[in-house]
Image (tube, rainbow over all chains, first blue to last red):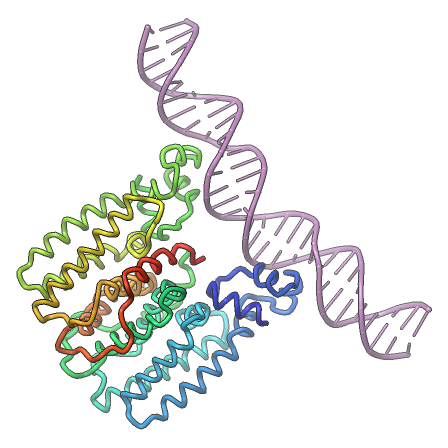
Length: 196
Length: 196
DNA sequence: GGCGTAGCGGAGGGGTGCCTCGACTTATTC
DNA sequence: GAATAAGTCGAGGCACCCCTCCGCTACGCC
């Protein structure tokens, strides 16, 4: 449903379903008939995007140089998110009552861990970071994109490459605060759903 | 008004004024009589916090080592924001119809530029970043704090110190994307008000 | 053509929030 | 003790939003 994609892209996963219906020139009843829950509509809208991302990610991962693979993975991730607030929301959270989204998120997290580890094993990425730090990065870029979407739509690229300098192994400094555990990370992603 | 402080802290600057009134055991009419606009209430709630921050910032700036001053300025900034979502919102945006907040934001931006420049002139911070990059950082830490507030309340420290490694002169790699201009930065801060 | 059913519209109940305004209560002042 | 001022309450108009349900259309099949 193109209207839903547009609306989620512009207003995030909490977009008004009445607006979506209006935009789609359909009544709310009809919308609810086709997509009983918001999550159904969400998945219908994002499934193509998720697959598209998956394909590009696989390609990025096939790069021989582990650091370059890491970089292009993140570039691809952010490029997909830029201009689509909903997709960033989607990746930032967990929808605990859907097995499908949980699976997608788990895969996503594992993929991140994999590409990170590869870069770490090659000595390119610092050894003291974990998947949670990358998820942090995903969280953090959301408002940057929100703020700059209309004004400086490429600003996230600069932000990302600045962050990449933080992830490089060379001359990294000791971090006092330990990384989040997987459980903490999970809980934090769930918590984002309850924020007003 | 303590209730407003609590509510803004928990739910951000867009918190429901009806809730604030309820929380304060007062009717909405009374609330509106005392604070005709949301911004009035906002300022009443945040003025002490802003001053407190200003004092600590001045102290941080008095540190002799420019890099240490930079670090403790940001640590202080984030510590003030941690646990207070409203303060982060407040610093992230611009409220264009209030001369007072505009002045505060201008001062804030100048202060950031100053402490950054000092670190740059000392050769500690990389020369190719600007105040806009620090504002980016402020934007970016918001959701990290939102997500981790209940789960890993110190996570923002790790995030900050990771970011600091990106700002060090010794680690810098060339950034392809130029920094935002001051005008772009301003517009972006204003734009955050319209996001649903 | 008649009838069943899948699909659609939209009213409407229940909720939240913003903000106003008139009625009411509590000082204060003379 | 009365008149005035200051402060308070909460109903109510308006706008959203979520979600359900019932009446209606239109199409296919006999």
